[in-house]
Length: 246
Image (cartoon, rainbow, N blue to C red; front, side):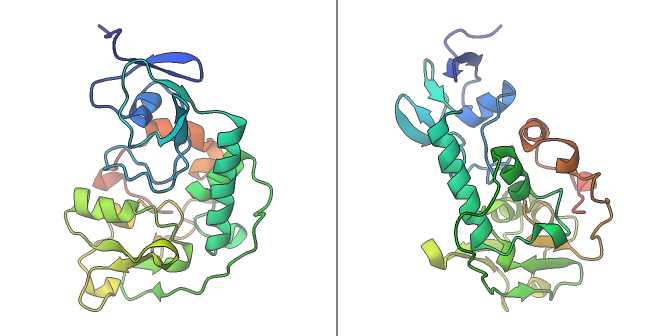
């Protein structure tokens, strides 16, 4: 039986939550979509992409790290939040080399899907065209840092699910970057495996499985079929047999 003291309101809709759930957890359970890129059910939330910022009793908080508490009045779909999410998404596009028409991740890319969801028509900001190191030293896994959006999903997945701690974020602010925890700093000298969650959870194609590009034709990929706001309700940390980075 639902506990009436475990309710919050999102955009005028009252929903129930379980003790210990965050606002994001409660919203996803109630099939209410709050935009996000760095959140993944089953991994410790980090709140670093900032797309899930909502208004809680007049203050801005990240939905993935804020505990749901009785009586919270939350605004998720507002023109101001939409504009902020649009600006964040546009900045993520220009800050990396996201070449959607020729990217093998196209159709499976969350950043691209978020752009479609928000109605993004252009990048708005000047393109950075960053030149960052590509690591092709591993026989089966490729790391292209120019696409990394620093969501740290691979960091958390490696540490919390794979039990390996292959990746880490080094530096702060504009100097933040993804590193590999091996003696040489190369993937080839790490213990990452092709079926690790960390090798398959990247939302933008910064980490790809070699020799698997275009296994699923464009038009049949995840976000070719469904909006990101629908896919989010079914996400969970994949089992090893579910992996697929095509």
